[in-house]
Length: 201
Image (cartoon, rainbow, N blue to C red; front, top):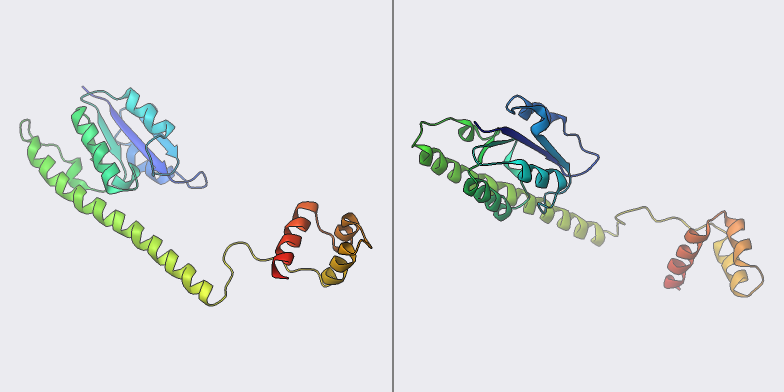
């Protein structure tokens, strides 16, 4: 009798695993068999995922909330599904009901065929959605730039005394420390602003 494992993942440490945990915990043999990562899906060198692979054996079952928890692109997901199949590990995806079905012994090929079609379609859609989001972001940045909008951190306005003090500093009339004190700026910020200002001269 195999062990039922669960795998949950979010892309960053600020995200919460609770929703996925609640979805898989009812299917696993013991909650100690739920492995998790707070890491990007761009590769599979994630600690939780790798530890789970080491623990799994033929006859075990893996439960995941959705197929994109395995990875970010179609080829990567397919490669791991092939790996699990070759190792004799059944993958059940809670968001894809057909993968959850039990089938009579000897008829596994039927569910495999259905699952392969669903997974092909699902991963293609998921990948297309990611590419569309990236394209929209790129288009948004391009439009913002044409309108002269600054993206990222807001540009710090220079103090009104900056030009006068800058000229005095460059003329050797005041020191850099006196300049910084007069405008209330820290050293790193000061020299960054000097560089930006001089680039506009």
